[in-house]
Length: 109
Image (cartoon, rainbow, N blue to C red):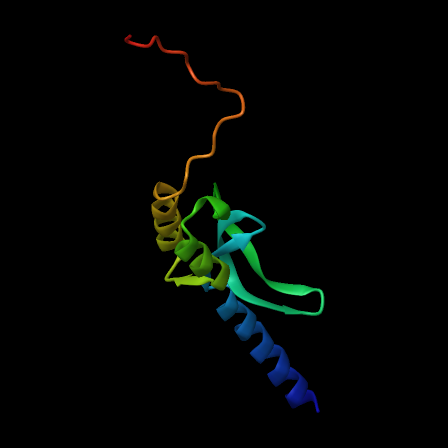
């Protein structure tokens, strides 16, 4: 009985360590993020956490990229996730700044 409990404890520890070495791009609400871990929960325990965000809205991306992000895009490590998220940001539709207004220009009539 003690051997089984020890094996489960050791296996659980190494299993959790493995999950924390995984990274993927996904969405947290409407924000594009790099998650560390795996997209799984056991009761109240989540096996993922936000490792990086660049505050890019998923809804500002083209539809194909939105679908990819919502499905989860595996990446090799955090740096690869950051690089990929920045490339997605380049294709995002700019969000109008609520503070700025268009500058009037004189018509050439």
